[in-house]
Amino acid sequence: MERPRVHRVLVLDDDVGVRVGLVRVLSGMEVEQCGSVAAARRCLESQRHDAWIIDVLLPDGSGLELLSWARGEGMETPALVLTADERVAHANRAQLLGAEIAYKPDVAPNVRAFVARVTGQLGVEATRRVDAFAAARRLSPREREVIGLFARGKTRVAVAADLSVAENTVKTVVRRLLAKTGFANMQALVERCAAEAWPAQ
Image (cartoon, rainbow, N blue to C red):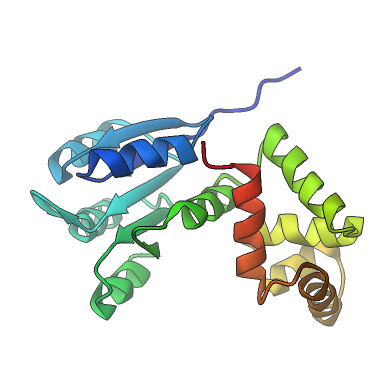
């Protein structure tokens, strides 16, 4: 039996406590930790990663500037930008650089959902837990399948294409899912699934 590939994630944050917390959230993945822009730049030049998690304010510069440099070098690795600063400019810049953004301090659900999307799969243990999530809520196999596709970052149009159904059919399944689970939207539902797939340690 072929062993699943271990995903490699770069975490850039000058706060050691935040890095330790993220390593726990990313349990089962290979995490490369950096505390400065200079160290992260060396890592980006020498290593390939499946995802980057980057703080904005660092002692020797800006994580957004590092991301801008990386994009200019042709590196298109998915990125999640972390910040405690709620300035709209940070969110706008992150979006222009093709990154997602999450606001500290409670970023664990966002990190879990981000990693589930960018790795394209949840892994055997995580899949088992998402199945348990679906079973506990008496979700149909189709509803479970729709959750899995949204968890991989698919849009409603892409989910419809993958399932070979009309977009209105996906809308109906989503309405049923939200009614059964009590979530306000698919983002919240996917974040909860990801939290159950990779519980905080």
